Length: 433
Image (cartoon, rainbow, N blue to C red; front, side, top):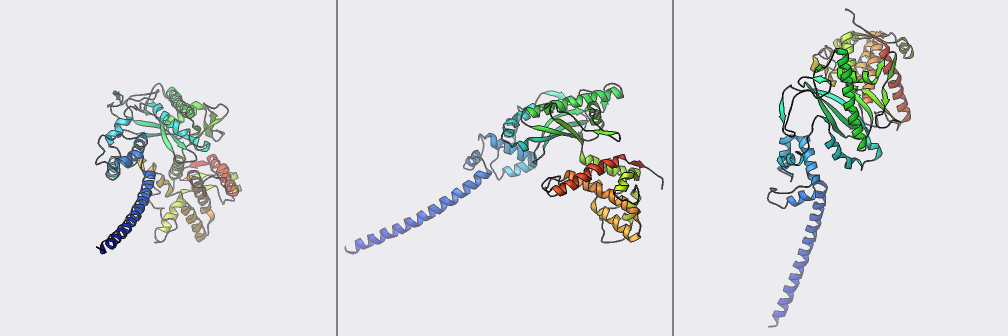
């Protein structure tokens, strides 16, 4: 009988030790679970975390934040990619997303419903994040008539006021942030190649209709808290008609690139051609006309040997380097110097194959090798266009137009401010060779 208390004591101690071990395991498991949950909360919303505890998501009610995230992912990944993502993470079905947004009509014109949804978000931004530009662009579409399931209307005809007939292009107004990487569509219309009235009157009506649509979109964006400071367009016929209607021009006789802001009369609304479009146009001009004659004051200020920018100099560089394995300008090929078809001309990469820093350096080396200065003017012009394109399209603080380094900013501003517009005072000629 005496061994019974001892055995009970040992059993008690054993149970206490096991209890302490399980307490430690529980504490460790609790810490790990809390840590994992906190990390999941940074990725998933509460309704998604609740969905993880269910066998399936049928009948699950999703929150607005999850619907918004699902919309973004579906737009970026496409339907197939989104379904692959949904197989691993708790997201709503594609049909659920469609039901949540089917009340939005997306009718041609200014997208008021979309802009209304953005207003609460914009109210939380800093002031510098509210500065936006309005970009007007077009894309070709196949003419056809169809029923819009959202509005139950037949679509397929041009919706821009001055155009008739079936749609051939979709013109969009995209708002893009100046200081951040944000953009969204503010409106769209369908256009056609058929205009009402004679050529002159048709262009005038088109310019007026284009500006009325853009003005309405800008005023709508200003009311939800955005500050539109600039409009960029390519130089298509419809956009040129709008520029002409507003009195915007850039000629040898002078430049006017702003009007009074429609929402803030004390400010100006600036207009600017699309930078990639200008860059491609400059490259096409050089390939088509072969020769550009620079103004005399540029030749004098830059101490250039001549006023001739000559495409055969670039062709000679390409032929000279074709026999070497290691090349200064490897992208400069015979195909790059051809006057390509319409689709190749639309690619920025086709222009950068010719207008780049390596082409300029190759021309300078060719001038040294042949002991001839005639290549230096072409090298200077290629370097100028390349530098302008890099400065106007780069977003990094190291290269973009930024006042963090006043000396570099002043140098870049002088180059862009006086040199690039000045070559517009030159002449282009096409001479038989």
